[in-house]
Image (cartoon, rainbow, N blue to C red):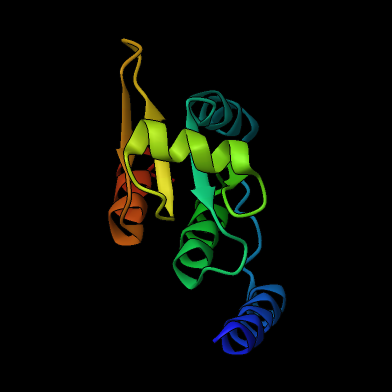
Length: 121
């Protein structure tokens, strides 16, 4: 099973490298606002997870600079994900609201829909 996962991971890396969309360019004022708003977001992810790739591609198409936290390679991020969200499952978007409350969103399609609604380019 390890060999199969390793091989599939390499395929996902290759596909991500070859077909990754370009970063969308917004007018400078709008990009500055989006960067400021995206400062309250973090994406917990694995580099070779196909659902994480889907979310990262959507972020690039939307021109968003959201902090990426690789929960597979960094045990601290994995612990944050378990303590905050309750599950070691990726992708997971950590959303810090203006009132200081924190929400954890786990499904890739839900994350993309949320980003598209919050950041209408």
